Length: 171
Image (tube, rainbow, N blue to C red; front, side, top):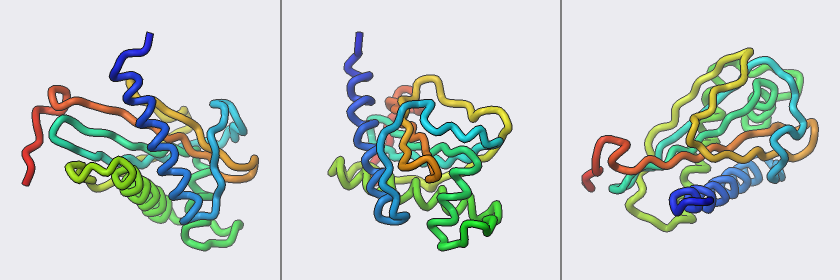
């Protein structure tokens, strides 16, 4: 049984995934598309995650990009025009993923045409070798292009105002 909240998140996840696809297409020249969860698993140790909140009076969306370490490295190389054999600095990994999630959040906001949405600053975390922990209520979709291209998991989570500490007051 799908709840009203569940179908809302499902529809919004499709919009968020499309925002990430558009961002990666324009910024990186990648033609990402939805892929099965196990598609092209690299087995690379480690992961990188960048997330951003989009808040409104009735709650907040949390848009998160999650990539294995190899994919994060490839995304960073493409964004910064690095050679394929050039290892990005850890700070560059953080900058690249935060930039991509920030642009995708802007596309998500644009497509929702909701001027009440406010985009916060993105955050970044990395870890491993265990898989990255996923929020229990977040919906997600894996995006991939080819087997040698970066893959990314798009996560979207909604929290109503009651779950986030009350209504946000408009400035």
